[in-house]
Length: 610
Image 1: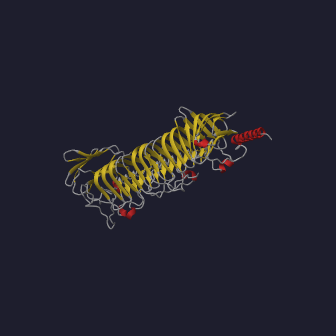
Image 2: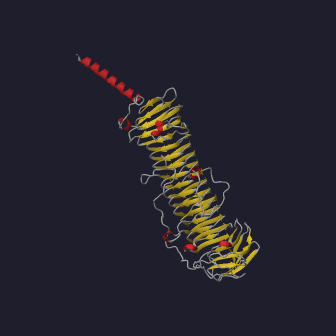
Image 3: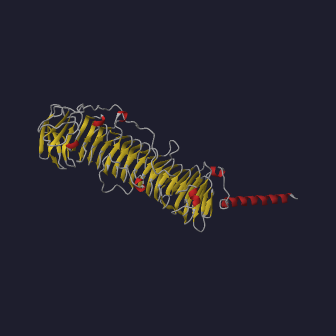
């Protein structure tokens, strides 16, 4: 056989091999051949393609991707731009585990009725980007096929690896029966305008979510944002440093199984239909969480985490049927501006709340701020509540003694129950406090755990606390700053200004309480033993000379019941107690913080299904 015949045969064989390779590349998946590929020279050099979508024909111009039967498969790391639309189709990313894939949507839309419109099955990281000024959409049907459900696919955008959302355009994600976006590894939000409508959760990142920029509008039946890894230590947290979030969720607005950290951004969150317009005050000793059916037991909190809640900046508008801010551990609020409506607590932590710098307004809530230990160091707190304004609850003895500490800032409380309430100690060492407590069974403007050995001390700052004398408590005689509990002859209506002036006529303290009152507690640094003061409320006026550090004055008591810390005296008698009468109850103090502190040991929030 001549050399030319060998050459011709070799050429034919090479051509046949090339055609076979091309056929397998374009049609292999459709033929049921599983592709197992590694990084190659093509992916190392970054493949690049423009893919024009249409129901008639999908055109792939470039390298690294192929189309078959309405499915576009990304086989190599690189950059891929999509235009056009598919009424029934899908993008599948199936690359080497180290591949970096960038998908650019430039006025593109895909609907997949039986599964994810975008499914990242294997890649190192996939970035989904929207081109500047473009309008795009990804959508799914109400039910996925059994094989997709069995594979765990449960979102319109479903990634089994790291996913990044960014861009300068707009993307709408519609999932009537599924989650909107679900990344099984980490999810990063870096920019663009994203609208998610989902029957389940809106945006999920199992290992964690990091938000840096962008605008995200989510309307969903489940959680708005959720991170839910409860297996791997150090995962399941959410960090938000920027971006705008408009979340309307049937359940929690933002839920992190572990820590939730927010340093900036804007959040407008409505959960569970929002706080009820009309609520009925419920006492602390009644279990408000004793729901009677599964629907009522669903968590619908605004910002929720099982670990540490840390907020140092941002703007927050929260309207929630459940707690507005909630930590199963500790909460550290050192910045930000908050406007809150809540069907339960405005701010709750199971262990400790430390508050500083931030501006916090609870327009309507069941209870304002609640934790085992609450410390207000600065900032502004303004609470209107049906229950307690600020409540240090939980265990009440030994190292677990509940503590409510105010060392700075401005606190204004308008409540239908107790103003400042602690099962253990209360300490005021700075700041400005004004309280208006509405009359009720067992309520007091200042209420502490005298029965548990607690103490109520004032060592600095100022307070005007208006309430009712029936259960009134006041500061302990071992305080370092003078205080005065003054009981009026008649109940003063809400809106009646109450003032304390010194003998020169200088007004030391004043407050216009919203609720009716018949007693007031005054304390400020200018008050001193031997000082002469005048108390005025409407047309009633009384003069007092301070002879005790914690003085109590009443004009007439009639059959008014005794209150802890004083005993009724004769009409016109001043200083009729001579100090707190504790009997055999041991005095507490501030020797130890509650257990917990700012540490781990998070509990697991609800709604953690994958």
